[in-house]
Structures are given as structure tokens and as C-alpha cells.
Image (cartoon, rainbow, N blue to C red; front, side, top):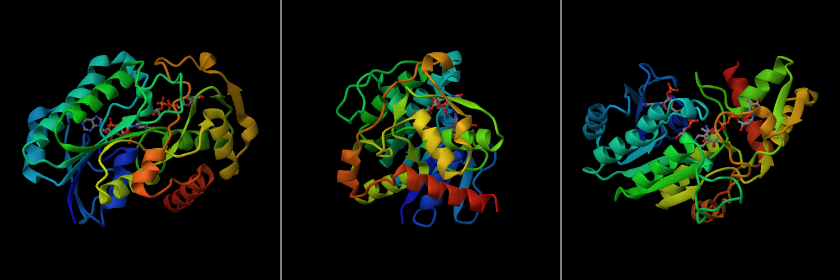
Length: 301
Ligand SMILES: NC(=O)C1=CN([C@@H]2O[C@H](COP(=O)(O)OP(=O)(O)OC[C@H]3O[C@@H](n4cnc5c(N)ncnc54)[C@H](OP(=O)(O)O)[C@@H]3O)[C@@H](O)[C@H]2O)C=CC1
Ligand SMILES: Cc1cn([C@H]2C[C@H](O)[C@@H](COP(=O)(O)OP(=O)(O)O[C@H]3O[C@@H](C)C(=O)[C@@H](O)[C@H]3O)O2)c(=O)[nH]c1=O
């Protein structure tokens, strides 16, 4: 059993990581809110921590000196990052610098979560060998944070992921929960058919990390589903699996949606490296959505 800090523990990924690892490792969860969103029990502890507070970060990490640090904390509202560039940089880059600096003295395995948005989307699908070209504040901040981790001299995994979907308490909607909510309430939705990616089931992301850790496979990894799909086709698939009315979904282009931050058009990942190093393959989208449907059925009672 290793000791493991999950930073950003109240987020979608943070809660899924706690779910995955709490019976296997000793977990110290930390996030910016006062209370934990994933029910705290005797199996893990929770501490309020703002990663932009350097002293608090040093104090927390150096008290625990864990074997593994997983950072999922970030300012993840991509459009809001355009309006609040300083906050974006402070959380997404400086916060990571503080975590890395505070870790140096006890040398943990440092796992950091990054994004497909480091690519401009002009030549996807992308492998780990491809050159990033981030557009927009969120994207630039996430690439800068990758460099902080790469230059840290710590043993690290940088796991780039994308279009995460899954179940967690009190988090903002992910694409799947948003589509389900809209269609369940008989609302029409307009979905872009020119943004293409490889959506990622959050529990799959956690399994991938677990397997990479077990195999001591370090470095940069693309950790996503393996199925390349447009947001429009994904929405239709969600409607099918959740038995909702797909005729409410209108096909549009990104120009019509007018999002504040630029989005990559095709930022799908090649996941060969992940499959090779982990000896495992992510679920198909159909399988993942069906698993999520079961998870939601349990949550909804
Ligand atoms: N969601 C996605 O599709 C993708 C996510 N990623 C990356 O994966 C990681 C996890 O994403 P996800 O779980 O979806 O994100 P969430 O926004 O659900 O979780 C991030 C968590 O970090 C917390 N947080 C924000 N600022 C701070 C801070 N200063 N100190 C401590 N905690 C803070 C958030 O709190 P609060 O909500 O109150 O701000 C939230 O609980 C992020 O690094 C993100 O960039 C990468 C690609 C795709
Ligand atoms: C709201 C809306 C979104 N969309 C599409 C466009 C958009 O790119 C996509 C998802 O919307 P979001 O705002 O959730 O997407 P976005 O916040 O851009 O999603 C990202 O999250 C961050 C944290 C990442 O790092 C990325 O990998 C990615 O998964 O859905 C529509 O087509 N119609 C709509 O009405």
C-alpha cells in the first residue's frame, strides 16, 4: 500500500481516482472547498487546500510526504480562462510549480493531468511525439504546466486526456451528463459536428493510471478512449444508449456556436503508447456509456 495525495479531489477525476484507489492505497485528498464531495469515510482523509497558496501547499505535502502525488486541480472552464487569464495562470501553472517545489525534498512519483487542447487540432489524431501548438489561455497554461513537471527532476507521468465523462458529486456538467439532462427535459440542443476527439470514461482514465503505476511506466501518455468521434455523433450515441430522443439534436458547426476560447477541430489521440505500456485497452464508447448508465442508476437509487 502506497500513500497517495489526490489534489483537486472534489472534481470529476479527483472523485473517480478516490473511488479507484481508496481500497488499494492510503489516500489523502485535498481540494479548494471546505468539505469533500466524495463521501469522506475512515478509508481516506480530506484537507481543504488552495494550490495557489504556496505556504499551505508546502505545509500539506511536507507533513504527509506521500509516495505519489496526483494533481487534478485546475481552472477547467475553458471560456472563463479567456476572461480571467491571471486566475487561469495562477491555478494551472503557478499552483503546479508550488506542488512540484514542495515535492522535491521527498521525491514522490508526480502524476499530472493535461489536455488535448495543447494541440491546435489541425493534424489530429495526435501521438505523444507530435508538436503541441496551444491556442487560448487554458491551452497555453496547461502546456506551460507540462513543462514545469517535465523539468522537475521528479519521476512523473503526464497524462493528457480529453472530453472526460462520468459520475461524481457536485461537479459541473460533463458533455454526457449535459446531453442527458437536456434531452431528458425535452430541450433541443445544437451540437457541433466539426470538433472531433476521443472521449474518455473517467473510470477508464483511473484504470490506466493504476496500470501505468503498477508497471512503473513513466513519461508522457495520451490517456483517452480509442474511438474517434465528432461531438454531434457522440451526442447521438448518448441518446441511443440512454434511450432519449435523438431528433432533439441539431447538427451545427463551431462557427455557429461562437465559443469564446478557440477549440481544436481534430484533437483525437492515438493511444498506442498507453496500450503498449499498460497492457490494457479502454472500453468502447458504447460499453463505457452503458457502464455509466449503471453508475447513474445506482446514484439515482
Ligand atoms: N474535464 C475534461 O474533459 C478534461 C479535463 N482535463 C484536465 O483534467 C484535470 C481534472 O479535470 P476535471 O476533474 O474534469 O476538472 P474539475 O473542474 O471537475 O476538477 C478540478 C478540481 O480542482 C479544484 N480546484 C480549482 N482550483 C483549485 C485550487 N486553486 N486549489 C485546489 N483545487 C482547485 C476544482 O474546484 P472548483 O470546482 O471549486 O473550482 C475542482 O474540484 C484538470 O487538470 C483538467 O485540466 C483534461 C482534459 C479534459
Ligand atoms: C454547450 C455546447 C457545447 N457544444 C460542444 C462544443 C464543445 O467543444 C463541446 C464540449 O463543451 P465543453 O464546454 O464541455 O467543452 P470544453 O470545456 O471545451 O471541454 C474540454 O474540457 C477541458 C477541461 C479540456 O481540457 C478539454 O479536453 C475538453 O474536454 O460541446 C455544442 O456543440 N453545443 C453546445 O451548446
